[in-house]
Amino acid sequence: MKSSFLSETSKALQIEDISFLITDSLIFIYSDIGLMNEELGLYPFLSAKENLELITLRHNCNYTSSELETFISNYKLDNTMNVSKFSTGMKKKLSFLGTLLHKPRLFLLDEPFSGVDSIAQKFLIDQIKETSTDENAFVIVNHDLASTMKFCNNFLIIRDGEIVFYSDKPDDINNLEKIYQEYSK
Image (cartoon, rainbow, N blue to C red; front, side, top):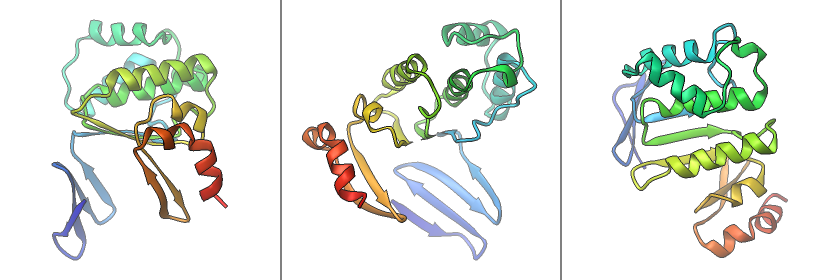
């Protein structure tokens, strides 16, 4: 990772060839990043389609109404009620769908599986696997080690803000629970 200062109050960060610009309290993240944070970034009194329409405007994407409705249908979401009435799993599926629309190369997902039932969890894992290519990367913060082992190809453990363990070895991934216990003491 390479970072360089542009001035005293702004900073540029380059990861591979994906760029961020951080200026004072504003963060401008270019279109190569898809973020699904704990807050999910959804408007509760809008429908799924209305939320996706706002996301496409924010990222300058061009999708027809019919295409958005197809996405919503494929994700088995209800477009007849406001998002405030959605279950946690439905909200997380919609938020993940929103991160996909502008086809980012770096996905930052914060606890995508917390609070979801096993069906929604499997659906999200399948979508991550389906979306994952050599052209993109997923950085996932997750405390659910069992679900993580189903799809990760490398992992790291952070304790008190420091990386204490990193591996991309299949044997380590298969023993993730044991390694986590060892490094979490």
